[in-house]
Figure 1 (cartoon, rainbow, N blue to C red):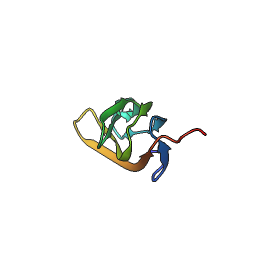
Figure 2 (spheres, rainbow, N blue to C red; figure 1 turned 180 degrees about the vertical axis):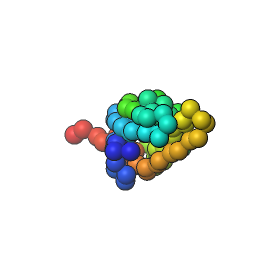
Figure 3 (tube, rainbow, N blue to C red; figure 1 turned 180 degrees about the horizontal axis):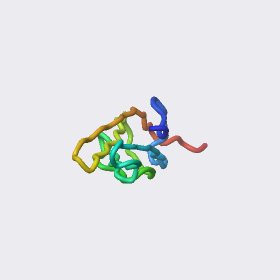
Figure 4 (spheres, rainbow, N blue to C red; figure 1 turned 90 degrees about the vertical axis):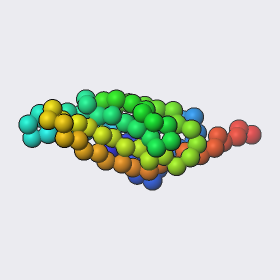
Length: 88
């Protein structure tokens, strides 16, 4: 998972970019089958790339892929989504 970067912080309400890739020895590139989830928000995107608006909190973002044989693999990163900054 190149995006979001592990340990990154964003302001609540900001658009979070999701970027991942997946390959399988039999199926080849299967990045289009990625399912993105957050432990706080549930499913947030599908495919190799996407964007999501996330509520405040520490989110465990997981990208999971399943090949044509039913085998699955996943990778996760944690990001912190903070409060909205005030404008003076």
